[in-house]
Length: 477
Ligand code: ADP
Image (cartoon, rainbow, N blue to C red; front, side, top):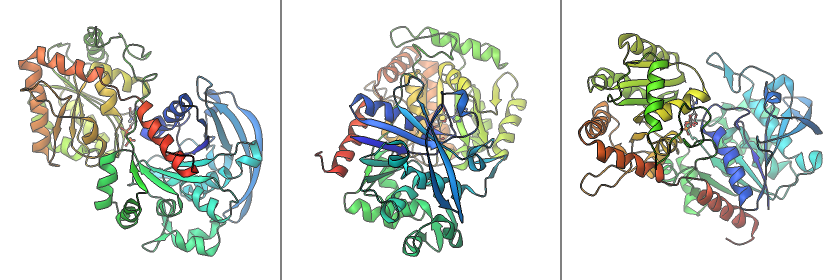
């Protein structure tokens, strides 16, 4: 079984959010199951620092009225186990950003990712990799099945994974003219008067999945305008929810190279060392018994930051310390910078994108706050469980599927969960966490350790993907 992943992100080469973690981790987990997976992403600036690149082919395809002569380079994931093909087309991808710069999207992303999608179909000829399944991720690769069924000349099956329905790739209809598609296909890509790439991907793929069972249900009710087509595919059994997993090679406090002290469920003492060091490094008061609440997030509306802003003073009056790592909307960035100034020694804001600090905060914090308005899967709550950092989350999407409310009566659950999207409901859950931390440290320790021992690795989810591939290729399952 040969699978080609086509995506805009893949860690460690290009990362903006969770998509970048999922692509390589799933490819590796599939490899363990005997599946031959390869990844196809653009060669962004700086990729050459992360892997050795070898020229292995080329392709010419028409995009935006011109023949585009592209080179295909071959590299590999860090341990060499999965090949990564890079689309080298400097006019589109040799830029400082992935999707844009300074808060501005690149205006030609439609053509950039159309090129990626179109060239994906040339890989069998160009480099000799002929997939049985084209597994395409999000709107950036959603044209792959459209090209495959129109101009592509392939009989590979197509699976579209929706990592976040909030990003659909919509453009004025007229822009469809540059995609090198027949007129009928251009019409089929039109949704509510606009060119909509994700919509096209949903219609043209053989199967569609999203990244948690709850989100797969939620988007049939509120699908950001696409609920009708999603409901239709679900009715035919063609919309599936598969939870993401965690790559414990990257996210494990026993081996994490970024943190100050290693620890494990059997010996969690090192967690205290990480907290002390982080407090010192970020100028927080060195108080071991004050609960430290962490957040790591893209600073966008989806993440529930308006709740945090509305409740911030009341959160701090619970007697916590707070640390945030994030970048995004300048209004949020400014708020958190200001909050750190207003609460010297008690609140810190790292307005940056830093893999290293993401790991350190997971290791140091006592509580991880994730009050998302919606969350397709969410990875940080699962990282938090492994790091003994008790998650406080809103019950939506994958957060609902992975975090269960602590029950003092039965000593079960792995975190704290709230339903209503309101500052009060969030504060209530945070208060329950802080109270337990203060009043019953033994119960807190059991809660932490229970979370650390849970298994959210990719194995089970990769087997579900394999079942989908088998269904697509008629090889059982
Ligand atoms: P989303 O994909 O919506 O951003 P996820 O929880 O699925 O949300 O994944 C987010 C990923 O991005 C996690 O690996 C998280 O650690 C990482 N991340 C987000 N913001 C930052 C940041 N400022 N610095 C480092 N990593 C970040």
